[in-house]
Length: 63
Length: 401
Image 1 (cartoon, rainbow over the protein chains, first blue to last red):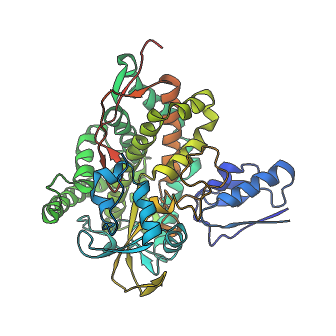
Image 2 (image 1 turned 180 degrees about the horizontal axis):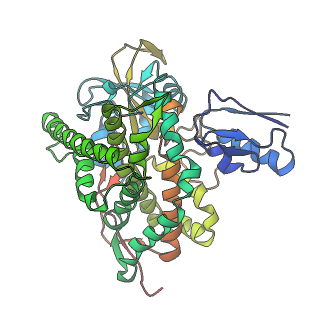
Image 3 (image 1 turned 90 degrees about the vertical axis):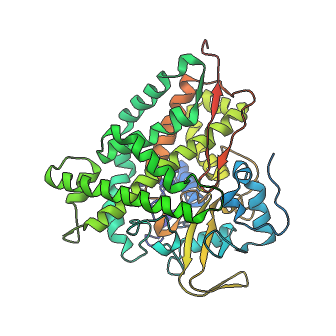
C-alpha cells in the first residue's frame, strides 16, 4: 500500500500521527510527515484509520 | 431536559439561551434538518447560520469566501487578533512563528510540570469528598499553565480571569449590547496597556518563555511590531484561559452522568484519548465560530451577499448523521471521527495540541485519584452559551475509597 499526503491540505490537526505513529510523525510545526511511505500489515491498517480520521481529507491510501 | 426548539426559532437562541447550551444537540438537528443555511436577526445585526458538516468544513477551508478578518467578530479589540483575524496569505507568517510554540513536541516538554500542577489542585479537595470542579480545577488548570508557558506572574491570574469573563460573557442585562460593548472595549484597553508594559519589559530583559521569544523573534527578517505582538497576546489570553476550562466542564459533567462510560476509562486509561476525541465531538464546547462573507456565495440555494455575518455551527457539524455513523451515540471507540471541534482549514485552533495534552493529563490524573464521583444531589447546572462552560460544577465522592 502507498500513502500520500497533500501538503496543501494538511493544517496540522495531528490525528494521523496520534492514530498511526508507525506511519506518520509531526514536524516542528505539528504538520504531518510520512515515516513509512509503503506500509504493510498492522502499519497499513493504522494508515487507513489515519486517512479516515483526517478532518481535511489530506491523506490518500492506494493499493 | 433538552430544549426542543419551536419551529421557526431564530438560530441565535444557540448563542443566548442557557437552556439550549445545556443540551444543544436537538437544536443542532433542528437547524440541520429544517434550514441548514438559516437567516437570523442576530445580536448586532443579521447573520447566517451554517450547520451541516459538509458546508461548515468547506467554509472553514475557504477563508477567501468565509473570512475570519476582524469584522467577523467585535469583542472591542484594539487590533486584529493574530493569527485568527488575519486570513491567508499573510496569516502563514504568523503561524510559521507560532505553530512550533504549540507543536506536540513542545507541548510534551510540559508533561511533568502539568502532572504536578494537576495533582496539587486535586490535593486541595481530594480528602474533602466534594469540590466545585469548575472553580477549583477547570478554571485554575489551563490558566496557570498559560501563565507558566507565557512567562507571566501567577499573581496576575485573578486579573486575567476578570478580563476573560468581561470579554466572553460580560455581566449585563440580557440583550444589552451597548453595555456589553462598553465593558469589552474597556477590557481590551486594559489588556493592551498590560501587554504593552510586559512587551517593553521582555525587550529590556529577555527570558526563555513564550512572550519573550515572540518579542525577540524575527519573521522574514523583521521583528514583530507592537501592534502585531498585542494582537497575538490578546488572542493567546482568550484562547488559553477559556476554552480548556469549558471543555473540562463539559467532559466531567458527561462522565459524572454516565458512570458506565467513566468506569471504562478508569479501568483502562489507554482509552482516554479516544474518549477525549468523542466528547470533543459530542459536546463541542466551542459551539460556533464567526466569519464574515467576503464575496457573494450560494450555499444550498441560498445566496449570501458579501458583508453578511456568518456563524459556522461546529456543534451541528459534529453531530451530523451525514458525516457520522450513529451520530447521536457516544462511542469512545468510534472508528471514523472527523470532528471539527478545533475548527479546520488554515485557522485550525493554534492551541489544539496543548488542549488535547491538558485534557489527557487532567482526565488521567483526576480519575486515578478520584475514580468514582457524582454530581452533588440536587445540583442544577447552568451553562453559558457560545463557549459552553458551567457556572459551577459541584461533585461529590466518598473520600475513604
